[in-house]
Length: 278
Image 1 (cartoon, rainbow, N blue to C red):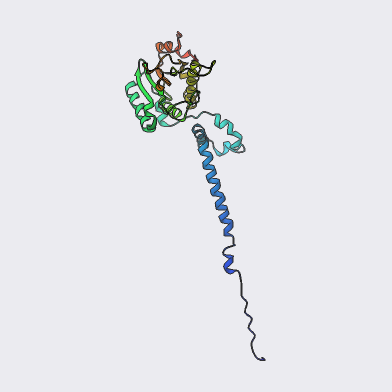
Image 2: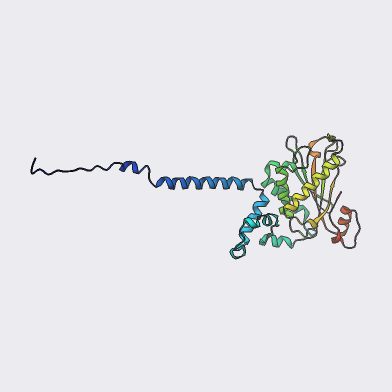
């Protein structure tokens, strides 16, 4: 055995296994966590009301770094969500210079119908727009199996909110405009003894008013909010027709005679009239 060279062979184990137990797992875990956070964020955003999304978007567009320094977004969250949005687009600025008194009502009516048909094709047969004396009327009506309000309550359904949003976008910023909101029901008696169709129709008109204000309609443009129960049916020969359950938005010229007509008051200065609720 003397004179023979001893060769020692070292075999390294675990080389192949190392590829399956290395740092890539940490990177993969970070990726999965990031994806989970992303989908959670998207879900939370989808649950936020559209008007709050707009306010949040406005905040991030307008607040500068120095202005927000040391304050943080969460510290100002309530103020942000309670702040009205100021639309400064060129289109809105031009619209603010228009007078509703001088507007061609027929052209405006056709444009509003077209917008509703394009944006809300599923409910366009439940929105009636027509020219009336001194302005334009928008009727938002119920349909069998498709109510605009939660049955028996003054809670606006998503379709009604969508219609009011389109109307708001079309009328926001007009000068010389007065808005009258009317609530109507069918002849079916309300089941409650104290809460009748009078209260229901008035509450629904008030709910529509609040929705218009959420859409940044100037409260000073409101002339009257009232409920008529079943006294003014749209389908006179069938008082129980679901289309009699409706909200009427009257867009009227803000001249002296019109303001006196919708408020029931005479005033030398028509701009001094304040919105009232029947």
